[in-house]
Each structure stands twice: as structure tokens, then as C-alpha cells.
Amino acid sequence: MFSLKPGDTAPDFTSTDQAGNVVSLKDYLGKKVILYFYPKDNTSGCTAEACDFRDNHQALREKGFVVIGVSADDERSHKNFSDKYVLPFPLIPDKAKKIIEDYGVWGKKKLYGREYEGIHRVTFIIDEKGKIEHILAKVDTKKPVIQILTLLNQ
Image 1: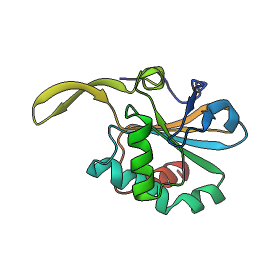
Image 2: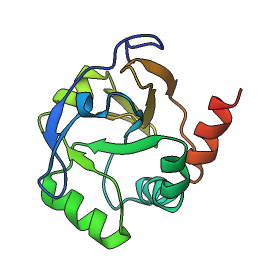
Image 3: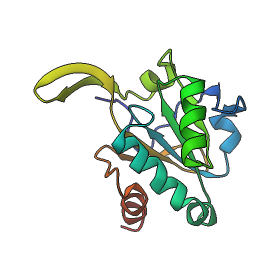
């Protein structure tokens, strides 16, 4: 699915978030980044995942993390999703799928026996130097924060 591995430099990107703010990965050097890719705004799994990051946002910040979400939805969809669930972190619209492809999270998926192309739900933990520390490919949408913290404490 993706060719990136722990120890690789995380592909840089510059884009705008749901509020029109410019977000560049390089601006977060010196901080730990949770970069999570998700299929679609306002779907049950993606909402549960985003709300878990929201509910644990302060605790993550206290541990030095910033959270950034990415999907192929547009800025308007991200803004509505963010406003509806009061999400305190940037959501990056990637309609052109440049970031999604740079991270290798676009590919074949299967649902109810039907194959299609889409975004795989993957979370990258990026260290303060911009290196990929961990890749979480099997995300528990209801408890991604516990899953991440457990992984980091191993």
C-alpha cells in the first residue's frame, strides 16, 4: 500500500485548512505531529475518530503533539465537519490527492465484496525532526488516541 516506513523523512506539504489558514508540515518542526488520513467527512467511523482526537486534544498537546487530519473532501466540507463537531485542529482538503499519494494512502479497498479506489485510514506519527516515527495502518476509529499512546509507550 504505502512505501513510507519509520525513519523516513515525512513528505512535506503546504496547503490550506478548513478555515483557509496555510498549513505546512515544516512549520511543525520541533513538535510531534499526528497526521491522520481518513476517507470522508461526516461518516460514522471518521466522525468517531475526529471526535476522539477532539476529546483528547488537550492531553495530546500537553504531550507535545499537534493533530492534523487529511482527506479528499473540499474546504467547505471540512469547515462544516469541523464546525459541527467543534474540532480544534486543522483539516486539510486534498481534492487533487497530492498529499494522499505522497503518503501512499490511496489504493484499492474492499467493502461488501466490492473493490474500489479510496483513502486508507492511516495515521503517521512524525517526530520533532520531521521523521516518521510510527505508522498506524489498522486504526481503531473509536479509540485512536489510546491506540497511539499505547504504541508510543511500548
